[in-house]
Amino acid sequence: WTKKKKSYGQDDERVALVAFELAKIYEKAGLHAECIEFYAEALRVYKMKRKKAQAADVYYALAKLKSSQALDSECSEDYDAAVECYDQGLKLRRQVMSLDDVELAPMLFDFASLLCNK
Image 1 (cartoon, helix red, strand yellow):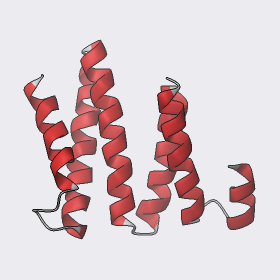
Image 2 (cartoon, rainbow, N blue to C red; image 1 turned 90 degrees about the vertical axis):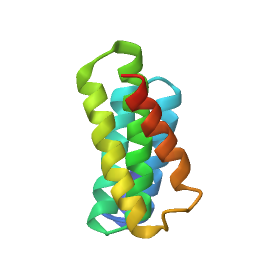
Image 3 (cartoon, one colour; image 1 turned 30 degrees about the horizontal axis):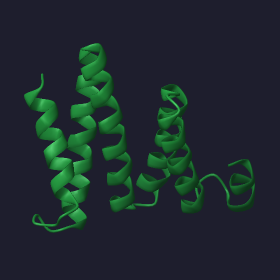
């Protein structure tokens, strides 16, 4: 992580990819604060570089994390954050893909599941 940032600069897409992958590792390890930090860093770079598909992937990952936390804790803040992430991710996904694209289906399904479980 540090080497990539030094080599390419903190605003490089390769650094964002590393941040995204680290976030997934932290999520699997149950370290959600660190996970969210790395997702946020990846999202910042992708949005700045106008990489809509990659930003949508980060929003989707954040939405799934927040959905899981909301269902476990019944916390309305996590629920609201999940809804916002799904909303933003879907907006971006629809800008780069057609409505019948297969990558859109899981995101729509997970979002609908969250809404039905409230």
